[in-house]
Length: 116
Image (cartoon, rainbow, N blue to C red; front, side, top):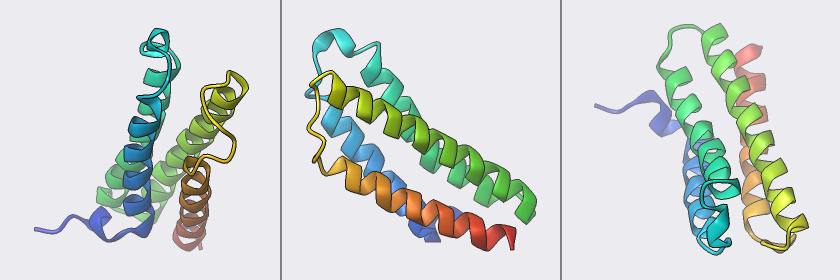
């Protein structure tokens, strides 16, 4: 049985972003394991999780609500990435920022489509 979120490009891109966040945070200092690293991983996981939950709900309004939560988690993650740059843990040209932009674009497009 195919789940509805499996067909969403935004979900697929968000899954790639989660993997990238886990790979990226492996290089962070050990003392951040329960701080910034854990926060970033939770925010990243929240994005595809909310897409999946929203896609499984009935009605566009409910789906739009979960899309909004996913967008909020993405903004939280982007802020944490920028903090990582400020702390010297990450280069501002790291590829993860391109993934954030891609997921943002896909979420915005999907949200527009669902709310029209």
